[in-house]
Length: 111
Length: 116
Image 1 (cartoon, helix red, strand yellow):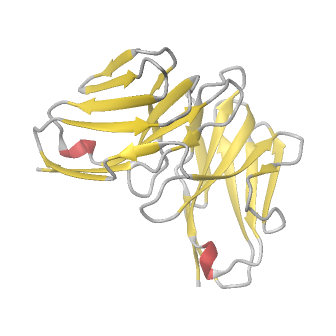
Image 2: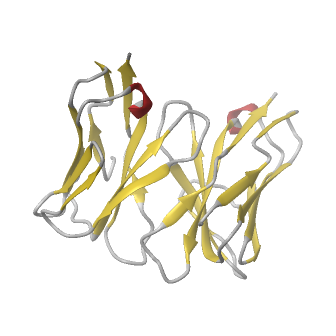
Protein backbone atom coordinates (compact mmCIF):
# COMPACT_ATOMS: atom_id res chain seq x y z
CA UNK A 1 0.00 0.00 0.00
CA UNK A 2 1.10 3.51 -0.80
CA UNK A 3 2.02 5.77 2.09
CA UNK A 4 0.93 8.69 -0.04
CA UNK A 5 -2.01 8.73 -2.44
CA UNK A 6 -2.41 11.32 -5.15
CA UNK A 7 -5.54 12.21 -7.07
CA UNK A 8 -6.46 12.42 -9.77
CA UNK A 9 -4.00 10.09 -11.43
CA UNK A 10 -4.44 11.84 -14.78
CA UNK A 11 -5.86 15.23 -15.66
CA UNK A 12 -6.29 16.80 -19.06
CA UNK A 13 -7.62 20.35 -19.22
CA UNK A 14 -7.78 23.31 -21.56
CA UNK A 15 -5.49 26.30 -21.23
CA UNK A 16 -6.96 28.89 -18.88
CA UNK A 17 -8.81 26.47 -16.63
CA UNK A 18 -8.19 26.09 -12.93
CA UNK A 19 -7.37 22.79 -11.27
CA UNK A 20 -6.59 21.22 -7.93
CA UNK A 21 -4.64 18.05 -7.27
CA UNK A 22 -4.47 16.28 -3.96
CA UNK A 23 -1.98 14.37 -1.88
CA UNK A 24 -3.40 12.30 0.98
CA UNK A 25 -2.16 9.98 3.67
CA UNK A 26 -3.24 8.43 6.93
CA UNK A 27 0.16 9.34 8.36
CA UNK A 28 1.30 12.63 9.84
CA UNK A 29 4.26 14.28 8.14
CA UNK A 30 6.77 16.71 9.56
CA UNK A 31 7.24 18.14 6.09
CA UNK A 32 5.82 17.66 2.64
CA UNK A 33 7.16 18.66 -0.73
CA UNK A 34 5.74 19.13 -4.20
CA UNK A 35 7.78 18.52 -7.33
CA UNK A 36 7.13 18.85 -11.06
CA UNK A 37 8.81 16.47 -13.44
CA UNK A 38 8.90 16.87 -17.20
CA UNK A 39 9.47 13.88 -19.50
CA UNK A 40 13.07 12.73 -19.58
CA UNK A 41 14.14 15.01 -16.75
CA UNK A 42 14.56 14.85 -13.01
CA UNK A 43 11.97 16.30 -10.62
CA UNK A 44 12.23 19.98 -9.71
CA UNK A 45 11.25 21.09 -6.24
CA UNK A 46 8.35 23.55 -6.19
CA UNK A 47 7.72 24.00 -2.48
CA UNK A 48 8.23 22.58 1.00
CA UNK A 49 5.53 22.95 3.65
CA UNK A 50 6.11 22.18 7.31
CA UNK A 51 3.34 23.83 9.35
CA UNK A 52 -0.23 22.52 9.57
CA UNK A 53 -2.57 24.85 7.70
CA UNK A 54 0.30 26.55 5.91
CA UNK A 55 -0.44 28.13 2.53
CA UNK A 56 2.31 29.01 0.09
CA UNK A 57 1.98 30.70 -3.27
CA UNK A 58 4.30 30.44 -6.22
CA UNK A 59 2.94 32.66 -9.00
CA UNK A 60 -0.20 30.81 -10.22
CA UNK A 61 0.39 27.84 -7.92
CA UNK A 62 -1.08 27.70 -4.42
CA UNK A 63 -0.01 24.96 -2.03
CA UNK A 64 -1.79 24.10 1.19
CA UNK A 65 -0.75 21.75 3.98
CA UNK A 66 -3.64 20.24 5.91
CA UNK A 67 -4.20 21.27 9.50
CA UNK A 68 -3.40 17.75 10.67
CA UNK A 69 -0.36 17.54 8.37
CA UNK A 70 -1.74 14.43 6.68
CA UNK A 71 -2.68 15.91 3.35
CA UNK A 72 -1.87 18.67 0.92
CA UNK A 73 -3.31 20.27 -2.16
CA UNK A 74 -1.90 22.10 -5.15
CA UNK A 75 -4.15 24.57 -6.96
CA UNK A 76 -3.18 26.00 -10.33
CA UNK A 77 -4.96 29.09 -11.60
CA UNK A 78 -5.30 29.72 -15.32
CA UNK A 79 -3.28 26.71 -16.35
CA UNK A 80 -0.86 27.05 -19.24
CA UNK A 81 0.67 24.42 -21.54
CA UNK A 82 3.96 24.97 -19.72
CA UNK A 83 2.35 23.54 -16.58
CA UNK A 84 2.16 20.13 -18.25
CA UNK A 85 4.08 17.49 -16.35
CA UNK A 86 4.04 14.93 -13.57
CA UNK A 87 3.30 16.48 -10.18
CA UNK A 88 4.74 14.50 -7.31
CA UNK A 89 4.23 14.99 -3.61
CA UNK A 90 6.77 13.62 -1.16
CA UNK A 91 6.42 13.37 2.59
CA UNK A 92 8.74 12.81 5.48
CA UNK A 93 7.52 11.68 8.89
CA UNK A 94 10.51 12.85 10.88
CA UNK A 95 13.46 15.13 10.27
CA UNK A 96 16.41 13.09 9.06
CA UNK A 97 14.30 10.41 7.43
CA UNK A 98 14.03 10.02 3.70
CA UNK A 99 11.15 11.51 1.77
CA UNK A 100 8.65 9.04 0.31
CA UNK A 101 7.08 9.88 -3.03
CA UNK A 102 3.47 9.57 -4.03
CA UNK A 103 2.49 8.02 -7.37
CA UNK A 104 2.01 11.41 -9.02
CA UNK A 105 -0.63 13.27 -11.00
CA UNK A 106 0.04 13.53 -14.69
CA UNK A 107 -1.26 16.88 -15.93
CA UNK A 108 -1.76 17.79 -19.55
CA UNK A 109 -2.75 21.35 -20.42
CA UNK A 110 -3.97 21.66 -23.98
CA UNK A 111 -3.55 24.93 -25.89
CA UNK B 1 23.51 26.87 -7.17
CA UNK B 2 22.78 23.30 -6.03
CA UNK B 3 23.20 21.63 -9.39
CA UNK B 4 23.36 17.88 -9.74
CA UNK B 5 24.56 16.25 -12.92
CA UNK B 6 24.36 12.70 -14.17
CA UNK B 7 26.43 10.94 -16.76
CA UNK B 8 25.59 9.49 -19.13
CA UNK B 9 22.17 10.91 -19.91
CA UNK B 10 21.29 7.76 -21.79
CA UNK B 11 22.93 4.42 -22.45
CA UNK B 12 22.09 1.36 -24.50
CA UNK B 13 23.86 -1.88 -23.66
CA UNK B 14 23.69 -5.57 -24.37
CA UNK B 15 22.27 -8.02 -21.89
CA UNK B 16 24.94 -9.29 -19.50
CA UNK B 17 27.12 -6.21 -19.53
CA UNK B 18 27.64 -3.78 -16.65
CA UNK B 19 26.82 -0.10 -16.78
CA UNK B 20 28.12 2.66 -14.50
CA UNK B 21 26.14 5.84 -13.91
CA UNK B 22 27.74 8.85 -12.25
CA UNK B 23 26.01 11.42 -10.08
CA UNK B 24 27.86 14.62 -9.22
CA UNK B 25 26.97 17.60 -7.08
CA UNK B 26 28.61 20.43 -9.01
CA UNK B 27 28.63 23.33 -6.58
CA UNK B 28 28.04 21.86 -3.15
CA UNK B 29 29.09 18.99 -0.95
CA UNK B 30 26.56 16.22 -0.53
CA UNK B 31 26.99 13.97 2.45
CA UNK B 32 23.98 11.96 1.30
CA UNK B 33 22.93 10.97 -2.19
CA UNK B 34 19.92 8.94 -3.21
CA UNK B 35 19.33 6.66 -6.17
CA UNK B 36 15.86 6.23 -7.60
CA UNK B 37 14.39 4.15 -10.39
CA UNK B 38 11.39 5.25 -12.38
CA UNK B 39 9.49 3.06 -14.81
CA UNK B 40 7.41 4.66 -17.57
CA UNK B 41 4.45 6.63 -16.28
CA UNK B 42 5.24 5.67 -12.69
CA UNK B 43 6.58 7.48 -9.67
CA UNK B 44 10.08 7.43 -8.26
CA UNK B 45 11.07 4.38 -6.26
CA UNK B 46 13.96 4.82 -3.86
CA UNK B 47 16.61 2.17 -4.44
CA UNK B 48 19.27 3.14 -1.95
CA UNK B 49 20.71 5.87 0.21
CA UNK B 50 24.39 6.55 -0.22
CA UNK B 51 26.48 8.19 2.48
CA UNK B 52 29.98 9.41 1.77
CA UNK B 53 32.60 7.02 3.02
CA UNK B 54 30.23 4.29 4.14
CA UNK B 55 28.19 1.47 2.67
CA UNK B 56 24.94 2.31 0.98
CA UNK B 57 21.62 1.46 2.60
CA UNK B 58 19.39 -0.44 0.20
CA UNK B 59 15.61 -0.47 0.19
CA UNK B 60 13.78 -3.74 0.60
CA UNK B 61 13.76 -5.77 -2.58
CA UNK B 62 16.76 -4.05 -4.16
CA UNK B 63 19.68 -6.41 -4.76
CA UNK B 64 22.84 -4.81 -3.45
CA UNK B 65 25.06 -7.18 -5.45
CA UNK B 66 23.32 -6.18 -8.65
CA UNK B 67 23.17 -2.44 -8.03
CA UNK B 68 26.59 -1.46 -6.71
CA UNK B 69 26.78 1.98 -5.18
CA UNK B 70 29.97 3.82 -4.35
CA UNK B 71 30.08 7.24 -2.70
CA UNK B 72 33.79 7.89 -2.62
CA UNK B 73 33.71 11.65 -2.25
CA UNK B 74 31.39 14.43 -1.14
CA UNK B 75 30.58 15.26 -4.75
CA UNK B 76 30.39 11.91 -6.50
CA UNK B 77 28.30 8.79 -6.20
CA UNK B 78 28.20 6.00 -8.76
CA UNK B 79 25.63 3.32 -9.47
CA UNK B 80 26.79 0.24 -11.36
CA UNK B 81 24.16 -2.06 -12.79
CA UNK B 82 25.93 -5.39 -13.02
CA UNK B 83 25.01 -8.07 -15.54
CA UNK B 84 22.18 -5.93 -16.84
CA UNK B 85 19.04 -7.56 -18.22
CA UNK B 86 16.16 -6.07 -20.22
CA UNK B 87 14.04 -5.80 -17.07
CA UNK B 88 16.64 -3.38 -15.68
CA UNK B 89 15.76 -0.93 -18.42
CA UNK B 90 14.50 2.15 -16.65
CA UNK B 91 15.09 5.81 -15.87
CA UNK B 92 17.62 6.12 -13.05
CA UNK B 93 17.66 9.38 -11.12
CA UNK B 94 19.98 10.50 -8.36
CA UNK B 95 19.52 13.27 -5.86
CA UNK B 96 21.84 14.94 -3.40
CA UNK B 97 21.08 16.45 -0.05
CA UNK B 98 22.82 19.58 1.16
CA UNK B 99 24.70 19.06 4.38
CA UNK B 100 22.94 20.94 7.15
CA UNK B 101 19.85 21.60 5.06
CA UNK B 102 17.92 18.45 5.68
CA UNK B 103 14.75 19.46 3.87
CA UNK B 104 16.32 20.02 0.52
CA UNK B 105 17.40 17.47 -2.00
CA UNK B 106 18.29 18.31 -5.55
CA UNK B 107 17.71 15.91 -8.38
CA UNK B 108 19.87 15.10 -11.33
CA UNK B 109 18.44 15.01 -14.86
CA UNK B 110 18.29 11.23 -14.92
CA UNK B 111 19.89 8.47 -16.98
CA UNK B 112 17.82 6.37 -19.33
CA UNK B 113 19.14 2.82 -19.48
CA UNK B 114 18.02 0.48 -22.23
CA UNK B 115 19.21 -3.10 -22.09
CA UNK B 116 18.83 -5.05 -25.32
